[in-house]
Image (tube, rainbow, N blue to C red; front, top):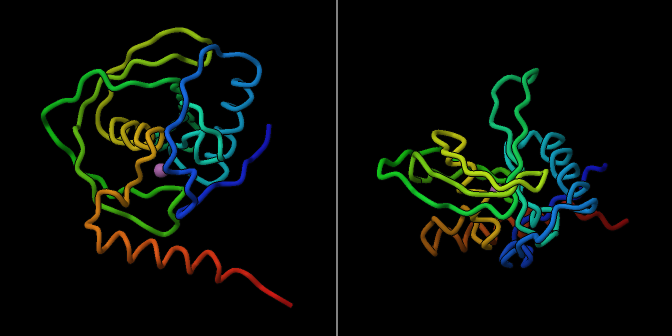
Length: 173
Ligand code: NI
């Protein structure tokens, strides 16, 4: 198990479409463990495999508030089956977009089908924060980011700023 390096905007890999997983075997299980470890290390509540550079349809989540009561959830090949009509709004951040929070309105309830880490087919109805996070992470699997919910002008400005931040850490001595 290991903490993986996070891929951040504007890396093009974040725009790729991730591939479904056919079978959950040793490599997939290792990937899931690494994703959990990386997510917890960075204090995130969700992470998609593409964010560590692996184009597989796997996401991990933990939206539990209590540090001592972890509720790790893993979704392989998640697919939204139903979206509720009611909407809810959260200020969303993303481990691939440092120091950025964007208000996004999404359906409050969603039903998702997926395969769990044992390879079993499942379906779950989610609401509240879990629903929002799940939709955010499934967006990642399709190359979509929270900045895509902004106007083009705001989005371009933000990408410019983030690109500068990235290089400003470089030191040449
Ligand atoms: Ni994200």
